[in-house]
Image (cartoon, rainbow, N blue to C red):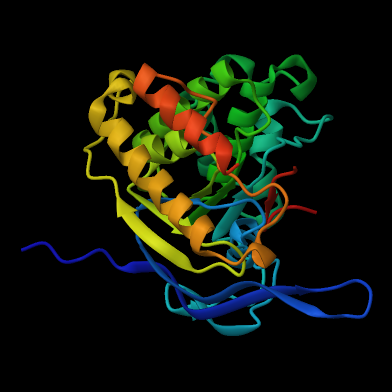
Amino acid sequence: MMSEPEICLEARQLQLGHAASRGGEFTLACDELELRIREHEFIVIVGPSGCGKTTFLEAVAGLVPVAGGALELRGAAITGPGPERALVFQQASLFPWRTVLANVLFGPQVQGTLTETTKRNARDLLTMAGLADVADKYPHELSGGMQQRVNLTRALATDPTLLLLDEPFGALDAQTREKLQDELLRIWQADTLSAKKTALFVTHDVNEAVLLADRVLVFSPSPAHVALDIPIGVPRPRDAAWRRSAEFIGYGDQIIDALHSQLTSSPASVRTHDDGVDSAHHRPTTRSNSLNQRTEAIGPVQVDATAP
């Protein structure tokens, strides 16, 4: 009998927030937040803009202090940044004076773990990401999509326990975004160098959430708590044809219904001016177009422990 995977990340009655620059008034971004993420899961968080998704991700990265409750990685309290976490934002922000390979090797170099083995692993990661042919090129010689693949590879090269991604494809055009969604899945599923990573991914795109996730966590309007936990019970690998299936669209409907329910039941005072979730980047069928129209109504730098 197989044992349950161990818990990688756990939040218990977690409170997070920010103090105003003037007056110092403290505003909660997350309140009484409870969640558990198992080892090797791919978790996607969706929720209204301003609900606290990014604040939570930054707290997991150790960039936002815990105001109350507990936030633990493998049973140890998170009190600051660490090499076991890598955070990837929308913009690649690669070092322009470094080649692709040198960018990928930056993390191990700063961590003091740069060896022939880590160099070989970096080249293997570039091959896995389809970047072996551009290892000696500089960032300005690459497309935006290729830069973001380098960004992801750089994060993986630090061998983190937990990979954190905050809308990493949000700044890209729809075609490139869809391609990189597939690339991320391929790289994540093929990462046998150090076992498949645990991943926590934030997005406004419902279709992206359904495609990538083992579970989708729907956050309530601010201050956030987990309003709904939706398992995506579809085996991997997931091909492009599945994006057009009734099953795919059904999961999207379930998430959108949960978001609508949260927004209509929440006091107007806690909503931001741009509350919304976007699935317009991908329109696989007429039925999903309807889903996209519904979402419209409710509608960058990589940071990791190696960054200077």
